[in-house]
Image 1 (cartoon, rainbow, N blue to C red):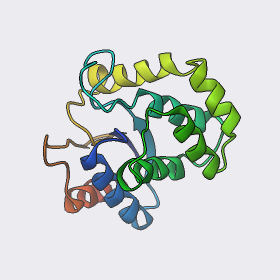
Image 2: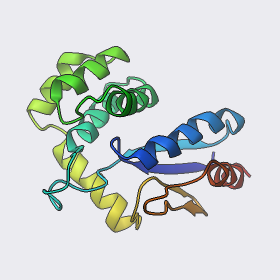
Image 3: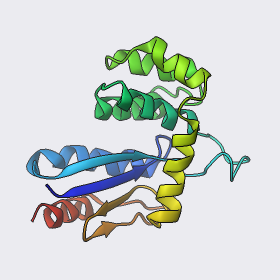
Length: 170
């Protein structure tokens, strides 16, 4: 099955829009496996002055994945929390509540964030995106033989996402 890695940040308006296109179009392309790769658009450890940070949102997403909860539902919930409800994705309570709403164990998410259980994985996710996959702006979609890079300050179009899905699905 063809695979597309999707690199995104929960606080990025271009990611919110680009992933909404992807979610809308995916039912037409059932034969494509999506690998969700949440990262920080502006890594806290490299750009401490740039806010909002979302390193905790990435860590919570990794925890939700490990708990076997609906990863897509969690990403959608975080975009809604940040963009529509104006909630902080730096707040452990918000992240845990969002996890609980999609069926994940709230206490396990809270404990994982408190103990920084996923911090090394979150930093490794940033390294994988920016150093190994040459992501320079999010969202970025990387297929096995093709990719769709976001244009800084613009993002991606629905037509571009559909073209990528068509190319990857054969």
